[in-house]
Image 1: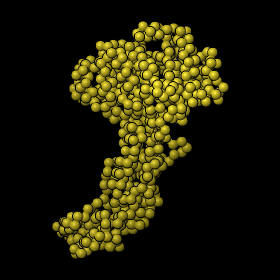
Image 2: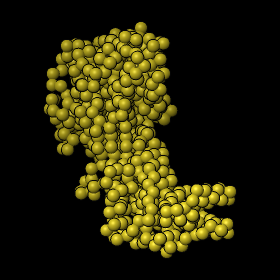
Image 3: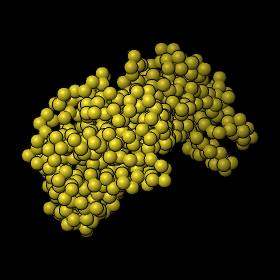
Image 4: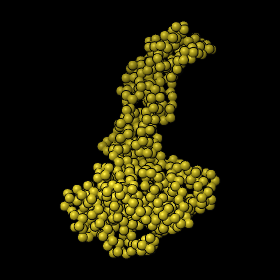
Length: 433
Length: 142
């Protein structure tokens, strides 16, 4: 439905807000079918029908990640189970996963949003799209895959890793658009340079970056390394995945698809709304999702809204800045979200591990490197190096199981790390991407 | 049975001399030392004149130290005498986890210390084969 899409994209603010209000009413009505929101509305004496203006949304409390964990597996499901066609899940800090459900309609609309993003980047059916993001529970791979296919591009579902093969695919199939994390893109460019190749050997014209924050400096470096234009893509699995907001060719902020999401920026401490231009926590409300509507969901991502809405690209959708940080301690390592508490959980259940540890993040050959430096317990050593190597291997293995990221493990003498005074500093992030 | 002290140390400047510093301050004499590196960390093994005291002071200072039983033998300081011991152990399929040695009297006698899984059985074996075992007391006061 290209006509409908173009019409929507040219919509003025008033039109957008009218559509939002209509959709918010029905979204709240749908949400009320889930046990979680039914109870939440009741305890706040809120009836979806009471909603008169968009600002009434502020009467409802925020939904937070913990609510998703507490609702595991299906207390947020708002449709009959037989209508669900897919679920995506992420593991939580304490092992309680969060789940997001999709109906066929949800997948269809999500795909539609991704198509819009790709069109905004100038991609067409003539393009060859190499999807270098992970498939599976991680929404980055599947989300873009569906959109790229619907647009008619030839999709190469390469997934992440296997760098030499990726470069071979660039060449053999004339890849023109890639979807990749900035850190992996840096690594791939290092490898093709080592192979004596340069951007002139490829046809890549556009790069879609997602899944991790990076700097403007790195963007310029990557645009030069690939001689291609970069586009930032924002999303999170709670809001489907990639394609919540996307950059137009102006390269200044990402347009939020406000016909599908309401965006708010709040002060993470007080929860009060912040005016445009001020950086705060991004909060989203889904407007069209059937299987699992989320109301005022706190993303913990920090960004700001650009005050001026009319964009030279012709769109009036609100633009948000790149993500500048987190309001919690979540780390993004190789595109994977993880919390220090997950690492602590693994360490503290491993016999032989002391009480003090430090998580060090740096970059090695342009890839994220995660090192866990951990003190051994005073009684853990019985005289042999072999025993320590086994402990090291055990920690490494358990971490991999828990956080899905390969970590280096350094064993330290008991008391090697400075004793914690008050809140211990557990993370040393030396990355500069 | 003689003991050696085994200490877990990070493979970093200043870590090893902390161990020897603690030993020195306690007035303990080191007979031999071996250091093995295992990628990021190392294990220091010491034969000292007061193993129990050494283990205690190191642990008091927060280090991960453990006493281990070892087998110590006296051999002539001559070509082939170490080989004789090792060949004997190999013939009996004894796996040597670690070994060190030092000369006591040049041209006269040397000491070999081996760490094995079953020190008591290995001691019996060596004794039977006519190898001279050294008691802990003799070892520490050589």
